[in-house]
Image 1 (cartoon, helix red, strand yellow):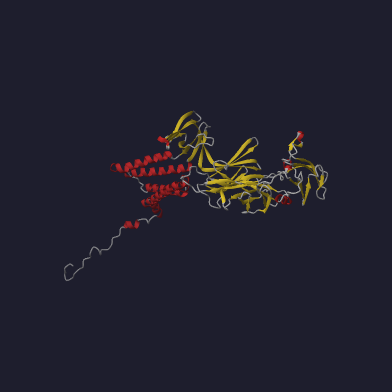
Image 2: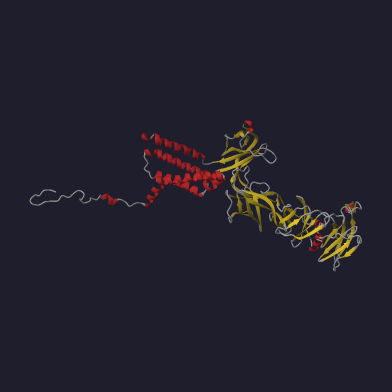
Length: 618
């Protein structure tokens, strides 16, 4: 407080209470620019740290997936996925914006700029490899032909091949199925080429296939049954389960463990009674012939009617019993004669006279194979059927199944002396045999056609031989559509033949192939073992590389790849072919971004050197 002067006093103003002086420059500053703030965020260190942490986590996940499910799985779901490419692109944007935000650049920025330029070049090389790179394998057989293509394991294709005049035509339908089973309902349309349309309906990455019998939509095929053997304790013998497939007009037999089985088609329903309970009395010396015509059944004694004609029905149809043959044999000019009097394979020669003055139909009836229809081989459909009974034909120790025209299944059981009718048999039915074992019917197909079926299996890193993928295709050719299961890579399940409007066509499911640009031929494969013969010490392939200019001998070993053209070949395996020849498997890789990655490594190292060792000099 100042002292009074002239009777008055004044209060001095403190500095803090002084009026605020405004800087005119504050009123001239522009408001924050949203675009620049976004660019600053994209180039910020915080975003870089977050992206790097996420990338490290993703790489760890990819490594774990590689160990657990294989490299193809890790590539598909991590390294070659759209979100991983997006993550890589975000890192590239962050690096680029970090460089641009420092414009105008100064000398002290040189190291920083060189390192970040190296990172951009590295990511550009990785993306180029992803887009245009090729990773596959080449199989060459010792002493075999030269190979000029690489099998690309990431891409599959269905190939259709057929004859077009004097030439072979083929169309390919490539697609990328991925390394995992497709979820239910997923399909992929592969398009149309040369009137062939293909659609993938189902895909299993690892599959085990087998041939089974399914229903033939045409209904023209013979029946089939799947059966199991049951022991005396009522338990199924695990190793004994099989299919019994009939033959049209002939039937079939098989030995099933201790049981004999037979399967035949019954041409008319009225014949079933004679089959289940065949006549055994009053057969005479030459047997009895059962004749089936429409709904009528006639039994004729052969002893009294050889050389005679018997009327069947009321429409004038007659059956002539031409001759009885105890041991039939073919004589001169195709005539039938008997080699002896003892009935070893008794047979009747017959003629069927149909109303209307037609030529009689020649028929043969054998007692041992009563259901065999000889008219089918001549393309003749005879309306009269026969069943020849003879005492010289012994009762079989077998379980015999019969399918009637309505598709129902019946059976009889023979014990060597007589037949015991079992009657109708349904799924799950149990038939006792004379040997004490039982036969269970597991499945019955009225008109059977062989089909492929596949079961998906989980990946196992301990597999000695990895099962291949399988796919179900829908193929349309013209106005016809076909479905087929195929397994990739060839083998018994790798192809399918079908008659189409374009002729007979073969479909093959395999890998896409790419040209090597040269040929490679295996001259010699060498395999060396560790001392004591425990494990492989090394293995190598001596190959001949052939291109347009010349050929040269080269060696490919475990640590010595072959670089030729745009491909690098690595020794990766040595399987053996089915015929025992040595095969060499070479991994073939084309990496168009390799030199960019090399250049990026040099830039990053150079930039780091400038930043840490030349900081005070520039």
